[in-house]
Length: 319
Image 1 (cartoon, rainbow, N blue to C red):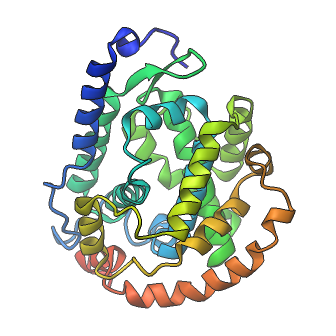
Image 2 (image 1 turned 90 degrees about the horizontal axis):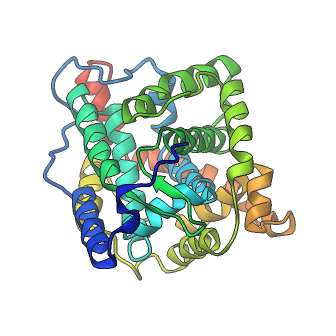
């Protein structure tokens, strides 16, 4: 972790707010066109024979895993501080989730140039995000240590959601998935990225002492639950939603968000659940949520039958 003081540490509040607005504008930029069908023959960063293409094709599992990943990432005070200070997630959490889903879809299934452009855009955003966390420590969004934590939280939760809602990955395929997915964080500037499942679990264990509960993570959990109970109360950023829907080739508004949020808590490692105060008793409805979500998996496959995965397969002639 870097210990040099960030440039923004002594900035005035208006100047920091102005820079935060610039970051949000860059994050919401919708000028880049999405076309997963061209250029013909381009496998992108992964390709049709990878585990990543198969795992990321199941939208229900990916969204459930994405919610779990957000909860896990929110327990790192420095990672959360960067989002808290520079993101509009408190007013538009659904929009932030959609933008994250769009980035994953683009780096997984997009042609090589689109994947590279998506990474460069995120790097440009990260370069602007500097500040001081409530505990007085400096943070930087492009800190390799934080980037690695964000990555392992996502891969752990995506694989866990796939196991629970679709089918359990064999050990060799789980290792392959971790190895494949290392390409994205390394391109973003992460270091010491695990390359197999055992390495990922060990890395997650090493980060455990850095995680903290408290008011801010609890606020994230409340926002997720509120979004699930009142899905239309805070409309998402239209550019992010429109681009994601166009890329998926179908509707995602009817996905049972409430069930996803309920199931996501059960995907967290036990120490993380304890930091959120998610007791075994609070997990009792989770089995029913898992059952309902499993029933949604084939329905969403049909609804998104012309989604990004199918478009990418046509691009490489593997449809």
